[in-house]
Image 1 (cartoon, rainbow, N blue to C red):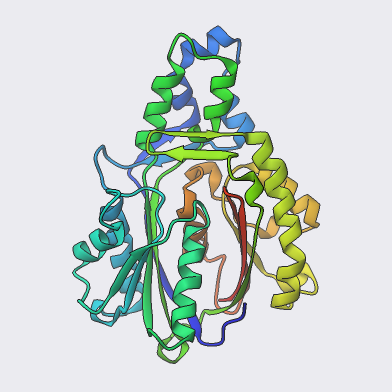
Image 2: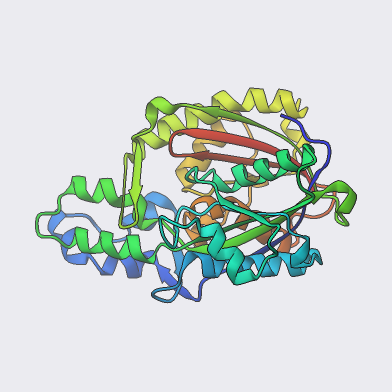
Length: 339
């Protein structure tokens, strides 16, 4: 899948105000850890997540997604009346109905011509949003889209702590709920536009997608619980990444890892990074790591890393970027962007 006319004009993001360390989180279910004979520091040791962030109680995903959307419009210098389409990609939603996209668009006061809808694909959602916007731009259906995502981990993590504090909780309970404890919160948005309207010319070159849906039950989530098989996700997720990479390298003209300046990846844990990069013989030093201080922010994770990389001066004009994500389901997307 190649694109000739699509650019990511600008990013915008908002980080929550409350920092929760892994040590603090462990203290909330310390009696269970002691009863199970698990030493302190397991959460950070096994995941590499030192801290994550929470919004104030009751903050809606649409509210923070709209805040990130406003920042993206400001950074792009694009007026809200120019938005033809708004795509919300959050796992977290205000309601099952209507689409959270409509809530975001309403809060942003987008024009009536803006086509608003949700895309759900676990941690791949934001990349799917960019691909959908790119396809609409390439087909001449729209000129400018806004892709947004707002995630809140406070509610599922709090419910998980309550579950772990049950006197009947076992080591299996801790293992099955471990992934939930690594979740973080955040909001991010991207203005995606036709190259003829773009001032920054951050070109979306193309993408490759692969699926391994026989592993669709390795991670199952609802608003208050995410049960996961960490080992299965690691093994089969890495397998899918390794399977996808040659197709992406061929499609995007990456005959050597040296052709890529920065890897912008979905942030899960250090073990996922090291295993994937070792299997593919890719340089880990080219990957910006945000999971140690943000945790796994679901589909917001990769675009937050991209936005933070630009803010920090690591991702600059002209760099060749590989956007690389594996999500539960299982699915994998590799996207090439020339920043």
